[in-house]
Amino acid sequence: VFFSDLVGFTALSEKLPAEQLVQVINLCLDELSGVLLDHGGYVDKYIGDAIMGVYGSPEPLPDHALAACRSALECQRRLAALNTRLQTEHGVTLSMRIGLNTGEVVVGNVGSVRKKNYTVLGDAVNLAARLEGANKAFGTALLIGPATAAQAGAHLCLRPVARLRVKGKTQAVEVFEPLAERETADEATRHFAEASTAGFQAYCAQRFAEAAAAFEKASTLRP
Image 1 (cartoon, rainbow, N blue to C red):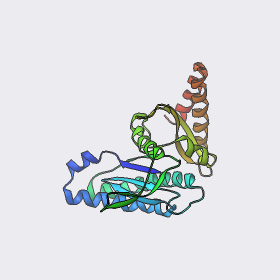
Image 2: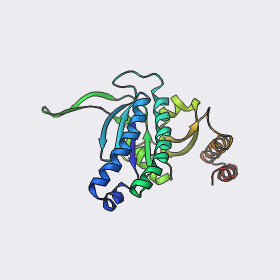
Image 3: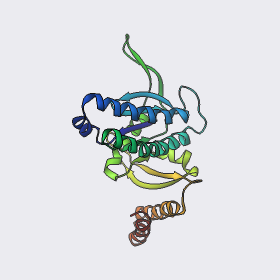
Image 4: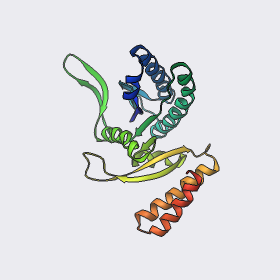
């Protein structure tokens, strides 16, 4: 399950006239939705400037977790490129936060007797939404849950970020930041992922001097 949200949308809505705001949002949603669809995703709904997407339903999708991660990384690249046009035509630039999570969900038509929407529901969906919001606390743009990392991690450079207990949960889960696909990652990104992973593991084991040294190395690669 994929959740994205444009950063600073409320401030943007106060800055731009309504017609111009709609142009900006439609331009972004068109570009980003295309990425989800190109990777086999299903656009479940738009919630203002936010996108909810699903991979593996309604049609089965092999490697759905990896497809979602590739979509998320591509969405970040597309928005960065789109910002040139947004700055020229509308005088604004945007960034986005994305949360991904993998798990069993209830799939089907949900709603009232008179109006229903095809969607997915369940704990895995809630965690995906919480991870999107958690990016703000960690200064990240993309966070994925442990099941997504387990299924797609072999193909990605991942940085463990935290053992996070989100609102409404009693157990913490380990969450990760995908940095790049392993095949296309440059040497600095690979070394950063390795140093960050070593530092995180040492920190969780309370080997703090070792953790500090690893994180210091990571910070020289990505200040």
